[in-house]
Length: 282
Image (cartoon, rainbow, N blue to C red; front, side):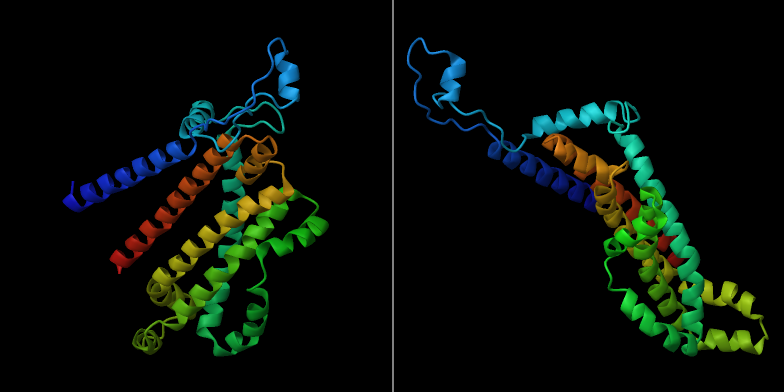
C-alpha cells in the first residue's frame, strides 16, 4: 500500500468522524423549560393546555440514520406492493432507465458527432439546431413526453436520452475534428476506405474525448433521473426519496441521498477507468 494512499484514507476517515461528531452534537435533544402542571391534572389535559415539555422532532441523529441503513440494506429486494419496494428494486428501475436512455443517446450522438466533426458543411447546417436545443432543461421535455407517450417509464427514458445526447454529440464532434491532419493524409494516400478510416484512424484518436462526453452525460443522466422520478412517481430511487419525504421519514431520505451519491460515484469511476484504459492503449 502506497504511503500517499494510506495518508489520504486516514484523512478521509478523520474528516468523516469529525462530521459525524458535529452532526451528533447538533442533534442532541435540548432541554426546554415548561410550566408545571397542577397536581392531579391528567397528562392528556396538561399536554392540551401546553403545560408539558414539547416533544423533540428535529433533524434525525446519526444513530437513526444508521438504523435506516441496516433496515434497507438487510433486505434490499423486498416487494410489499406498489408503494413499498426495497432499495435494490428501486435502484434497478432507475439504472435500467438511465442505461437504456444513455445507450439510445450514444447510438445517435456518436455517428452524428462523427459526421459533424468530419464535414464542415454538416456542422454549419446543424449548429443552429444544436445551439437552440442544447440549453433546454431536460425536465422541460417531460410534459410533452407524458402527453405524447402516455407512459411515465418511457417518458423517463426519453428525458435521459435528451440530457445524454448533447455532451456526447459535442465531445464526439470535437474529438473527430481534432484528429491530426497527418494521420488523415496518410490514410488518404493509402486510399483507405471511409468506413475503415473512421474505425481504425479516427475512432482510436478521438476515443478519449468521446469517453469524456460519455462520462459527463452519465453524470447528468443520473442527476436528471432522480428529479424525473420525483415528478412522475411509480418506481425508482427518485420516487423512493419523494415517498419517504411524504411519510416524513427523514432518516430514510438521508439514506436514499447517500445511496444516490454512492451509485453516482461508482458510475463516474467506471467511465474514468475506461478513459485510462483508452489513454494507455494509445
